[in-house]
Amino acid sequence: MQVPAPFEYERAESVQHTLALLERLGDDARVVAGGHSLLPMMKLRLATPEYLVDINDLRGELGYVVVAEDMVRIGALARHADLLGDEALAAVFPIFRDAERLIADPVVRNWGTLGGSLCQADPSEDLTTVCDALDAECVITGSGGERVVPMAEFHQGPYETAVGDAELLTEVRFPVRPGGSSAYQKVKRRAGDWPVAASAVAVWLDGGTITDARVALTAVGVEGTVDVDEALVGRPPSEEAFAAAGALASAASDPVTDARGSADYKRHLAGELTVRALRTAVERALTSTPTSTP
Image 1 (cartoon, rainbow, N blue to C red):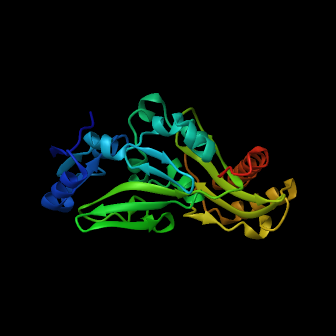
Image 2 (cartoon, rainbow, N blue to C red):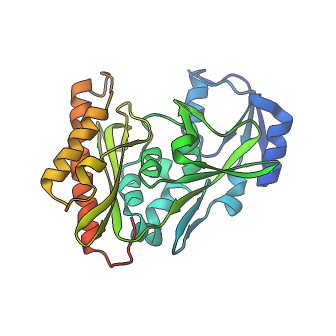
């Protein structure tokens, strides 16, 4: 039977209490929210923190989803189920509902959080790719106040983030822009599994012409977004343009062969899923109201 190494447990009562605990306990402390990633790693002794700081009582402070005209703000403790069920969020960013429907199972979705997903920084994690495609910003809070880190700088490698010692990810912000939509496509071996490959897409149109597009990939060795401007920007949406963008996504991929599939298969999926996501996102943008956003 696999069990974690011994650890001490503290339950935080507020953001400021969390920061005080982290300052006192030092770099041997880890924050736990849903725990669906950290606890399995502890059982395998891949993570051996001396202290766990439980922040689930901070739901009142950090469990919000706020959809405004120019920005969406999501607290770090918003759960997967919150994101899946929020109608206002789905209207603005349908990509969230696409992704959340494919993440794990109801037990995990009822407990796992946006902040926990991003801070785990797993290269196969779904919401990181969604946040990359939507050009998110991460609000990191410490005793000296808040700092805002672009999503492109938040992850600093597998399982490494810009959150420092005695700091806490408290909010993720998404700029709202008119004229577009978004979509997420994923292939997995079984329901709720990690992706074999996935593609997150956001596009913006003006007068039947693509004015901007962002593509981010999951589990295929790509960090951040893939540059697809050459294939899409300044052109009307078409299957030819989507195929060209898919080819760029495939070329940018650097997957490895493992139990989920061969490198060639994953590279093919990166392109095909990008085409499918672009097709869906453009269709949504063309059928939405003039003020709709990705």
